[in-house]
Length: 186
Image (cartoon, rainbow, N blue to C red):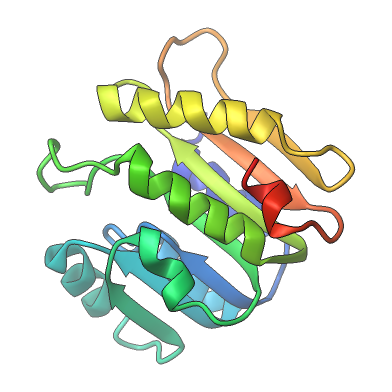
């Protein structure tokens, strides 16, 4: 079976082109690279210099990426137009310090921002890791939040292994029609 990150890439590649994509958790740049290959414009966020350096090195051939050494919680201060695709891969930087993980307080703000900025037909992909304390908090919160999104405005799918407790999984959210910012923040 494929890893969740590979499944996310399969979902992304269902559409051949995106105008504006955002990688809200840059990490080592795997998602950023794919987005740069199929998007006119990409914004990428991370709080760790090491993540930005690795990603810049990996994407040196691409000039359509704007890098933000900034918490994704501040994305609303940077993103000034609607987006077609938003990608989150929560947890810690692979190869980095495992105790430095995404935090629900900033992750929730960023996901609400991403959801509110999505174009009609836009896609929000959250890869969650409930196998550690912070990841479990994020998973519980986003499961409840996504379950409460109005079905006439969003389609929400959860891709998970049902026979393996606390395994990583994906929440795939697609905006079906115009929704207000208040709807996305319920």
